[in-house]
Image 1 (cartoon, rainbow, N blue to C red):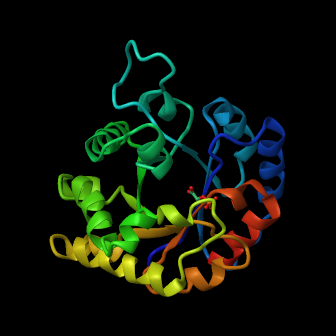
Image 2: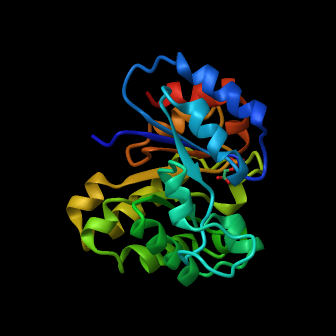
Image 3: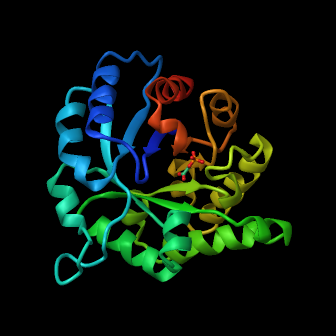
Length: 249
Ligand code: PGA
C-alpha cells in the first residue's frame, strides 16, 4: 500500500501568524492511519516553519529551487540552502512556473536533478491546459511532461519522486476534475511508468491537484490511483486542510 501524501502549496500567501496556527493545530492532530503531510510556504517563512512544525506531523516543503548550487542569480534559492533549512520536499514544474515564468520541460528536469542531488524529494507537477483538453491532447501532454523527467532518471532517483497531476483548468478555479477524469489520468501515468519500471509504478505516489477542498477530497482520494493531494487555496485554511488530511488518513 502507498502511504498517502497531502501537500499544501501556499504559493505567495501566508504569514508568520499562519505558520504558528498550523504548528499549534497540527501538534494535536489525530489521524486514523499514517499520512505524510507537507506544507510549502514561501521562502522567508521556512525557518519559522521549521520551529513551529517541530513535534508535529508537518514536514517542510519549498515551492521551487534554482538548478545551480550557488552563484550570481539574484533572487534565486538553491537546493543546498533549502536542505540546510530542513526542507524535505520541493515542487518542480508547477503550472504557474511553467506559464508565468516560462519554465520548459528541460528546466523542470534540471530542477528535479538539482533537488535529487542534495537529497530533496521532488514533487513533479504536470497537467494540461483547457485548450489541450478540448483538443483531445491531455494524455499526450501529461505523459510528455512526465516522460521528459522520469525516463531520464536512474531507478534510485525515480524512487524519490512524487508526481502531482494538476489540470491547469482546475487550479484556483473552483472547477475540480471529476474523480473519473482524475483517475483516468493517474492510471495513464502509472501505466506509462509500468512500461519501463513496474516495481516503481506500484510504489509511485500520484497526487491530484486543482481545487481540491474539504468537501471533495474524500471522493478523489478514494480513487484507486490517487495517493494524495496537492492543495493550494484550501491549504491556507487550517480547518479545511486538517479535514483533507483526515480524509486521507
Ligand atoms: P488550488 O491550487 O488548490 O488552489 O486549485 C492547487 C495548486 O496550484 O497546486
